[in-house]
Structures are given as C-alpha cells and as structure tokens.
Length: 100
Length: 484
Image (tube, rainbow over all chains, first blue to last red; front, side):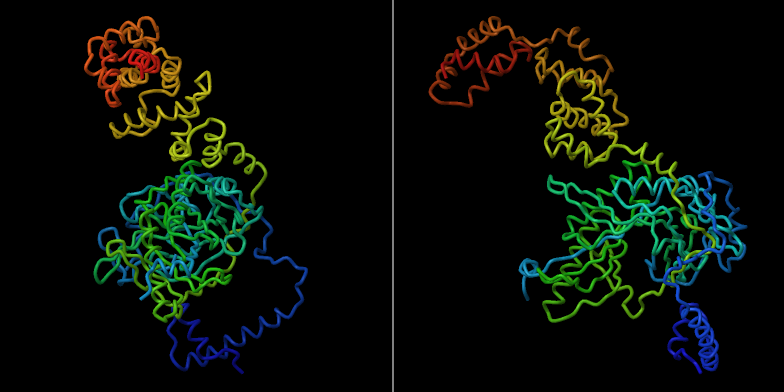
C-alpha cells in the first residue's frame, strides 16, 4: 500500500545520488511509504503549545577561541582521493558556479 | 521593437541582493585550520573541513563577535538563540554533502543599511544576516575540475536585502556601502579580488503601480562593483525585451560572464534545488550572552553614515567632501583628529586641505592615509596659519609640501623662510601705487573695460612680494587705485 509515487521515489533517489533499479524503486515505494506512514502517526499528535526541540541535550553551543592549530599534512588530507594533480583533487568536469 | 527607455517608463525593475562576506578570523568557523589566502592547495584542512566521519564542528567565538557588530551596525534584531542548519547538496567543493548554514532562525533579521546616493541618505531594508561556512574552490580545466579545499570552512555572513532596490546604480552603491561598513567595523578585508565579498542578484521587472513581484532570475558571479551594475542592467534589458516581444521571464539561475558582458542560463526551475534543510544535530543553539553583546556595543565605532551627516550639519563640510571623508574609516578618523586639534571651527577648511593637498601627496606616492607623513595635528596647525592670515593660502601649499617632506612644523618653516603674509595696508598701498604707476598702458586698458587685466596687476603685486601680499587686501587696494 505505497503512499509514494514512483516519481517521488526517483526524485528522492536523485537527491541522495542513489541509483535504483526499476524493481528497487517499487520496493522503496513500499518501504519509504511505510516510514512516512509511521511519521504521519507522530504528526497527528497535538503540539500546539510545544516548543520544537532540535537537540536532545539541553545545552548552549560551546565557543572556541580563534586559535590556529596545525592543519592536516596535504598528503594525509588527500589520502582517500582517487585522483590528484599535484596537490589539487581532480574530479569530473562540473558546471562553473554551482549552488551556494 | 520598443525602445528600452520607453519600456522603463512602463516597467520598474525590482532587485534583491544576497551578499556573502568572508569574516576576518585567523581560524575557520568550525575548526582550527588557518584561513590564510594563497596557501598551497589543500594545505589548510583538517578532519572537520574534510568531512571525515565522526569529526565534530566547534564554533569560533570571533565569528559571533564579528557578525554581531554587523548586526548592531545595521540596526538588526539579534536573535538571543539562533540555530545552525544543514543545507544539502552534492558538489565537489563540499566534502560533507551539506553546508552548515542558518535557515529559519538566523542570527540577525529586519535590519537596514543606509547608502549615500546622490548626496542623500537612502535606506535599504535587510531581511536577514546569517552565518555559514564557505565551500572549497573549483577550478575548471577542460574535461576535469580541480578542487582546493583551503577555502572550505572560512566563516561567511550572508546579507540578504529585501526586494526593494530599484536600479543597478543603487545595487552597486549597496555593495560599496556594505564593503565600506565591514571594513569600517574591521570584521572583513572584503577584498573582492580574493572573493572575500561576493554578490548574487535577484532581478525582476513589473508594471509600475503593480504590487506583486514579477518572475525573478538569479544572477550569480557578479563580484565587482562594475559587474554588479553591468550584469543587472543587462538582465533588466533582457527581461524587458523578452516581455516586449510577447515572451515570459522564466525562473532560472543565470551566470554572468564579465568578459563576454552577458549572462547565460545555468539552471532552470525544473532543476531548482531541494536543499532539505534541517537543524544540525552536531550544533546546539547559538546563544548570545549579555557580556558578549556588551563588548560589541562598547567597541562599536561611530558609523559612516552618521558621520557623513555630522560632518555636514555640525562642521559645515559639503556633501561631496563628507562623502569622500567617510569613504574610509582611517580617513574619517584623521579628519576628526585634525578637527579636534583645531582651536576653532575648522572643519570645512581642514576637509579642503585634506582632500586636495594631503590626498594629492598620498596619491602621488601611491600611499594611503595610514602612511601619511603629516599627523592630523600638524595639518590643523597649518590650516590655522592660513586662516589667521599669517600666511597666504598659496604660501600655505608650499609650506605643506615642505612640512610633508621634511616633517618640520609649519610655524617653524614660516619663521625660517620669512614668508609671513603682508597685511599691512600702508606697505601694500605703496607697492600697489608703484606698480600701477609703472604700467600706465595696462591701467588704461583695464579702466576702459578690459577686465582680464586685473589678474595682471595682482600677479605683479605677488611677484613683488614673493607671494606674501594678503590677496584680499591687495584686491581691495588695486580696485581703489585703479578707480574700478
């Protein structure tokens, strides 16, 4: 009893950069649909006077002094990089600008 | 096709700006790597910047102080408790797959920035100022792109105006004013060539009198004052021509190409991003405590636009000069110090000397005011010598030049060179009388209407006195002697 359309699942997969085979899309319609259904149960609770909670632990943001510490050595930082050109990371061509 | 000017009579442009400003901190917003510009690629990273699993962000206190200064300086409402959110997108310059930003609870809201536009103050409303981290830098080389993550994690404020800017000129002036303000507050170098101040513009047009906003396009990559103006002008024209020819403006993002002087579509609305914002679970609410706020308020300098108004109203400085003086905080501070050192009301005269002689000397040496060889007190002393008639303005310029070069006090130079102005009427009369007597032909021609010859006589008196004759008295006596 899926509550998600095929198109919706495909959009979610695209946003997550996941490739789904056709039968996987169908499976996800069901599985994601069930998760959404679960949330719709939570959403039905009356929260009119409840302040939204975004953190489980009540604490303020800790502040750090503006002090510089050594960075990672470049080779260490780039160890997991599939392709390098000197100290630059090489990726397939992308459109200039990009989101900000 | 209808002329653009004609279309602009019927339609008005509506512009909103989103400006990113890099804050001047030593370390990054959420980690301790340095923020230096121009370091070797990928040398300023750490596990937080690289988005390593398990690495946790820790917020930099100075970022908050800098942002609060901007918030207070723009009369924004400061949120006592603001929140960081994750903005998700996939791009090679963003290792985590999300940018830490602020979404529905930004630090500052509902402020305004005052611009000096055509000599008057114009107010632009700000919707919000929020904190976020910068992304890395992509460079495009043929079939591949290069990524340098040194910039990733540099603190940014994003300043978002209300959609109420009505011309490209005003948009450019907004950029200049914001640039001046963040430098004034010493919270950013705002060097546009280093990308420390970057602007996106939302542009739409609507029939005049219409309340609803037209469909907007977003212009990206307009990173100089000139480009802001050119790109917006170009986009307004493009939209008006499109409407005029029966088309419709599409919601899209366009990229400004400064070399070609035109924009190209980058993303259409079909591809509009879904950023899936949600509160960052790694970062509890950012709380502004009273002590931090008190420090910010105590250390806030007098701002450029209030100074612009004070210089005119209280010191009698012209609007043009006042605008120049507040163009740079060091310049304004120099002016204030000189005015303070002047025993009378010397504002207007000091402004003249500063903006002509002092800036002239600095420009000639390619220096700025902080490198001035003449302290403000000495400039004030020189101005007093001229104002009280001890020396003429012309001699004053020579004294300025010598004092600037040697560091000697103006009064000492005047004494040593014996160039005190001659204001003794009897002495000047004898000189005037002699000169007119020695030039009967010129005197006669002047008397029969050749006005230009008056300057000849003034010049002769000045030559005779080595420029020391009081010009006002000299003029007066010459008129008397020549009979007109």
